[in-house]
Image (cartoon, rainbow, N blue to C red; front, side, top):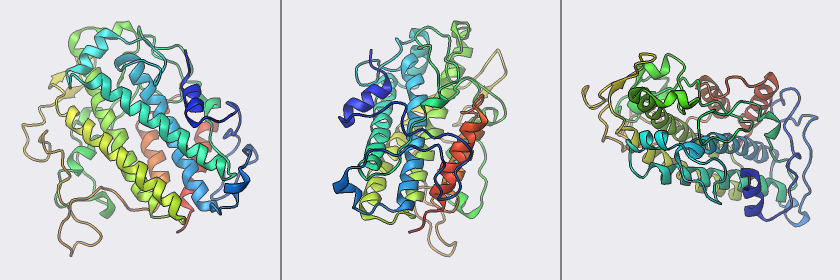
Amino acid sequence: METTEQVQQRRVRRRTSRRGFLVKGAAVGAGAVGAGWLLTDASPALASGGLTKGDAAILRFLAAAELIETDLWQQYNELAGIQDSETPGGSGNPAYTEAVAVLDTDMAQYIHDDLDDEISHGAFINAYLNAHGKQTVNLDKFRTLPSSKATGAQQIGRLTNLMQLTVDTSFWTRYRSDSQNPDFGDKLPQAVPGLAAGRFPAIPRSDDDLSPDDHLQAIANTAGFHFCFIEQGGTSLYAQLAQRVAGPEVLRILLSIGPTEAMHFQTWHDKAGNAPPLTDPTNGLVFPDLNADGESTQTNLIMPEPTIFLQRKFPIVSIIRPTQTKNAAMGAAKALTDDGLFRGQSAEFFAALKGLAEAADAARH
C-alpha cells in the first residue's frame, strides 16, 4: 500500500528524496536559513524567475502547515474516512465511523476529500519551491508521536497528537458576532467551554474508548469541533500571509488555495452543529445544546455575520476573521500548539516550527 508521501511523489511526478530537505537543528532566525537545510535541485528555467526570499519563507511555512494538516487528517481518515489509493493507510473503525456519522451521513467522504486536498496543497507548494531552486520542507524526522491503538489505525509515527486536545471553540461565537473581531483585540467566548479547559481525545485511543456510547459520541463530537478549528485557522492564515507576498504568481497561489480552506471550514461548521448535546460519563465533558442560548451559538448561523473591520467607524461587513497580518504565522503556530496537537513533540520540532514561522512573518510586500 502506498504511503502518503508516495502519493505526493506520484502526483507531482518528479523524483524526490524522502529524507531530503529536512528542517532540523536550532530555530531558524527570521529570514535566515539554518545549517540543517538541504537545497533541492533547481530547475534553471524557473530558478531565474526571481522568487523572493520572503515569498519562499511564506511558502515554506505554508508547506509545513499543510504537512501537519495532512498528518492529522490522515489519522481521522484511517478511522472514520474512506481508505483508497488517493488517501492510503488504515482500515476504518466501524464504531467510531458510525459515531462521526451522527454529525452527517456523508462525513466519511468529507474527511477523505479534506485529506486529499491537504495532500495536494503540500505537494504543490513543495514542488513549486523546488522548481524555483528554493528549499522545501520535509518533516518526516519528527514523525515520532504514537498512533491510536484502536482497530483501523496504522501503527506508524505521527507528527500530531489527536488524543489530548484542548480545542478552542471561540471561532463559533466569533463568526456570529456583529460587534467583535479578534483583529481589534476582542476575545470571544467558547461555544463548548469544556473543550478549552481540558485534554480530550478526538479519536479513540484504543478499542476501550468504543464504549460506553456517550463516551464514544463525545470523542466524535470533539472531532467535529476540531475539524472546524483547524480549517478556520487555515482560512485566516492564507488571507493574512497573502498581504505579505511580493510576487504576483505567489499571490495567485495563496489566493487560490486559501478559499479551499474556507470551503472546508464552511462544511465542518455546518456539521459540528449536529453534534448531540451530552455529557461524557468518563470525564464529565459537556457538549451543550447550542440552540438554547440565542444567536451567539445558534447552529444554523454558519454564514459569517457582518462585523467591524479596519476601523470601527465603517459599517459592519461580512468577512473572514482575523486577517491582521502582524505575527500571523507565529499566531498560527501558537494556536496549533495550544490545541495540544504537538503534545509529546521534541524541542527540536518546536524550534523548527518557530523558525519557519518567524521567517514567514519577516516577509514584506
